[in-house]
Amino acid sequence: MKYFPLFYILPPEVVKIIINYIDIYYITNIQYFYRANLFKVDLIRNFIRSLLWFDNSFITTNKNFALDFIINNNWNNNYNRYFWCCFTNLLSCRIMRDNIHMKLAKRYNESYIENSKTITKLWFKLCKKYNLILDVTYYNFKSKKAEKSIIFPARNFTKPINNFYNILYTPIIQYNTKNNVYIIPYDDILDTLNIYCR
Image (cartoon, rainbow, N blue to C red; front, side):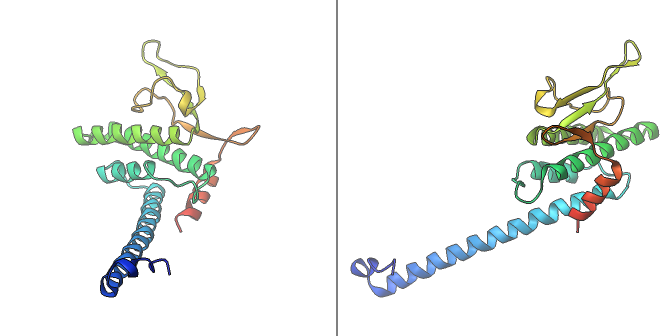
């Protein structure tokens, strides 16, 4: 019925071609939407699985691309704030663990250092996106002492965290409700991410 005015202007064969083209265009858009959704879900599930499995080659270019894709997409409907706290908390643990492992083994090269800086910047960007509360303790190399722990939302940091070189402990992401701020136990982090990677 909505194409009825076209019959006054164009012959019926041309109107039929136009209607078929519009239907095909809408069908391809719907297919693209569902394929993109499946791709997003598979990507984040695979990233969570790689976080949960302990291998020594976590910091790679592929992880950087995947994390960049995760940051640049909208996930509000699928994942809540508690999930993002757990996700970024485990990600910071993996980045810190891999940095320490590579420094102790002295097996790092320029590409690893570049990937490490990139994934750390992306991790901080993800924390800023959801304005997660970070608990960071820096190490002062001059006095050879730990500085006082800084607990702020990620958007309130004056300098972005570009690497974990001068951070003494793994940065902890704290979960906040209306009136409470608390640290999520490690077992709860693993349980939550296991639920989301199914």
